[in-house]
Length: 251
Length: 293
Picture 1 (cartoon, rainbow over the protein chains, first blue to last red):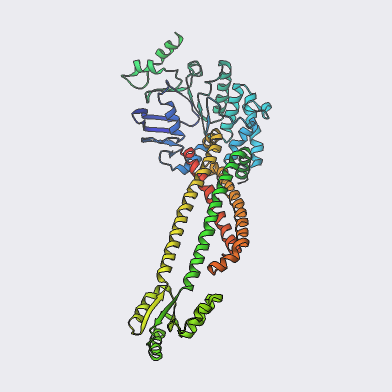
Picture 2: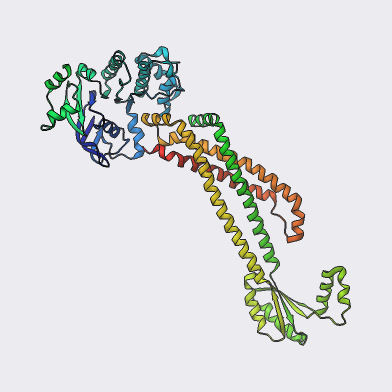
C-alpha cells in the first residue's frame, strides 16, 4: 500500500532521507525507529505531503503522491489518520466536539456525525468523558481522544508520531493495545517511536533509520539504536543481526 | 457554508476589539477616499461646464472695416465645419452689454463722446480644441484688429484638472494599499490565535478554501461594515455642504454641485466593491503563509 522508491530529500546541506526503499502492505503494523534527526519525521512528512521529495517516488494506494498537485493533498490526507506525541486537541472544544470537528471539516452530514462519533469514542474507551474538555482529562485519555479523532473518518493508514512519548509506561501500553486493536480491524499502522521496550515486546515489523538511510527492516524486529547499528551495520547496510540487538537490550 | 458563516461570526465576537479597530481605520480611509472622490467628480464637472462656456472667439474689427467685408468673413466662418455659430456684434450692442456689466457705474461710459468699442464677430466653435484652426482662418483677413479667445486659459484649467485627477488617483491607491495591510494584520492575529486548529484541520484533510472561508468572510465583513459607516458619514457631509454652499457654487462657477443622489448611488457601489475587495485581499494575503503545505 505504501511504497518508497529511491526517495531522497535534503534540506540544504542536511540529509533528510537518502535513497530510501520501503514497502508496507495493507494491514501491516510497522514501527519506525531511529535517533533524533535520523529522518523519521522526514519519512512521515513526505507521506503526508507536507514536503516534497527531491527524487524518487512514493506510492500510496497505487498513486504516486510525489506527483499529485497541491489541490489533491486534502484528499490524500483524508485517507490517513495522524496522532501526535502532544495530542494536539483543541482546548476549547469538548472531547465529543474534537472528534466531530474532524468529520465536520470533511463535510460529513450532522446526522452521520451524531451516529459515528459516539461509536468511535466508545471504541477508544472514553464515551463517559465525551462532554469534558481536554484539560480535564489525563494524558492517556487525551491520547485516546486524539486516536478517536484520527480514526473517525475510517482512514486506511494510521500514522502515530511517538504517541506514547508523553505517557507513563502503563498508560503507554494501554495505548499500544488500542493501536493493536485498530490494526486488527484492518487499518495499517505506522508508528514512530523511541520506546525500546514497546518495540521489543510487540514483536512487530521494525524499520530503522539513521542519517537518512534505512539501516534495517525486520519482520518481528527489535529496536535498533542508530549508533549501534551504525557500528555493526555500516559495512553490510541492511539487516543487522537480531540477536545482537537483543543482547544490547537486556544488558 | 453554514460552518463558515458560524465560524466567521464567532471569531468576530471573540476578536471584537481588534475587529473594531480595523473597522475604524478602514472607515477613516474610506472617508478620505470618499471625499477625494466627491472632489474629483465635482472638479471634473466644473471643468466641463467652464469648457463649454468658453467656446467663444471674439474677433474685433478695425473701425475702417466695412460691413460688407465683415459679412464676407462671417460667410467663410459659417461655412467652416468647426464653427457652430457666427454673430455680428456692433459697436452699439457692445456698449449696451458693457453698460449692463458695469451696472451702476455705467455713467463713467456716458462721459465719453464717442463709442470706443469696436465692432466684432462672435464665433462659437463646437469643440474648444478647434479654436486654433478657426483663429488661423480669421487672422488671414484684413480688417481684423484683434482676436480674443480663452484657449490658453482653458488649457491651463484642463491641465490643472488632470493633475488633480492623477494626484487623487495616487492618493486613492496608497490608501487602498494601507487598508489591505490593516485588514491583513487583523486577520493574521486571528489566524495566529487559531494556528493549532488550522494545522489540525490540514492534517485531517480540510481543503485550503475550507480553512480560508471563515477568515475570508471575516475580512469581507470588516470591509463591508466600514463601507457602510463611511458611506453614511460621507452622505451627511455632502448633504451639509450642498445645503451650505450649493447656491454660492452656482453664482461663482455657474454650475451646480453634482447632485447628491447621483453621487451616493455611485459611491455606495464603489464603497461596497472596495470594502469587499479590501477585506478579501487582506485575508487571503495574511493566510498565504499558513496554507503553504
